[in-house]
Amino acid sequence: MADDPNKPSTSSKTEDAPLFPPAKPGKRVDYGTNNTLELLERIPSQVVDLKLDEVLTAVKEVDKLCDYPRCKTKTSLMGQDCQHCRKRFCFKHGLPEVHGCGEEIKRDERKKFLHPKPAKTIRQEEDVKNAKKRLDAKLKEMQLGRTQKATGGGSKKKSGK
Image (cartoon, rainbow, N blue to C red; front, side, top):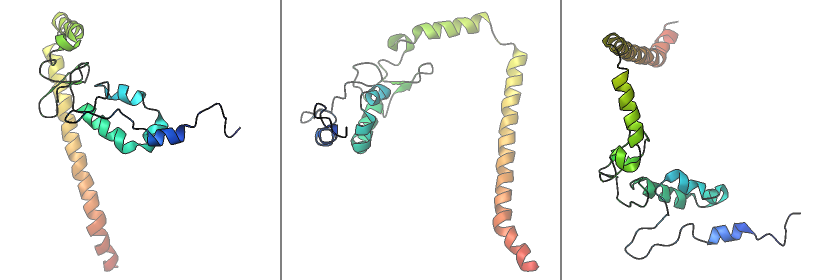
């Protein structure tokens, strides 16, 4: 039951074969997708374990490209993040109506227009946000005080006894 003659051994084939087709000279490697999750779903986990460096290089390269299908524009320096689908697009595909989030934007804007928040609610939300900021600052200050007491104050008490 250890080796099945009908079943081809995958370990030697996966170690020798390249993970992605080689690129032509002067061109980038075509990974077949701009979506990182789609790229990783196609690769078996055993292959990922064996060729982790190659997979990480591919993921970094795919993350630098526009997420619009078949668009190969780099977005590492200039690009737009969509606030609805959380993907990164080049300026050509950055508008929600172009890359497919148009209906969702319309729904959200219609909801905001038909059901606006009262000014009192907005003020209360701002007050809560400011209170959280003050609490975080106070907690950081207390944490620093504890670490200073633990490192500096503890040794003085022991030497005084």
